[in-house]
Amino acid sequence: MPDVEFKTWDDEQIFKQGIELSLYGLVRDRLRTFLLYKKVENFILAMVIILCLVIFLELSIEQQIEKYKWLDDLFYVVNFFLLQFFIIEIILKTFALFLEFLQEPINIFDAIIVLVSYYMIIVDLKAKILGILRVLRLIKVILQMKKVADKKKAD
Image (cartoon, rainbow, N blue to C red; front, top):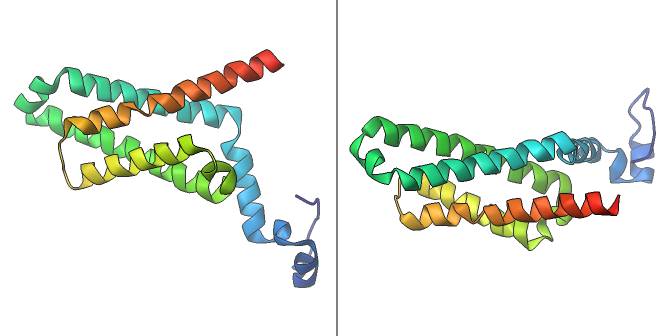
């Protein structure tokens, strides 16, 4: 991003130097920097791990959940909010990183799992395949951990 300080808005300067100087470009650049910040990446990774733990717990105490309505409601709310977090993550990453994000098949796979899971929660579809599908998000976690390990080896 060019280092330009605006004292007044100058359409001609923006037109000459391209989209990088536009508000759109500025927001994308700042959001990209934020999303690629190590602490943000680690927080998102932690949220994926929490979701997987919730799913494993939900699958392991399925009979108790069926017996107690409050437990079913609790898992519904937790899953709903976690999936909303991931939908926001996907939207923000698609906006900020666009092709860089969409060119990786694991991101598309992950987005499909999140969207299908969210749809199934919204329409209140209960299917065992849903839990298994969402646990497949662990593939992304494993790949992210491998990337971190490879970066540490390279440094």
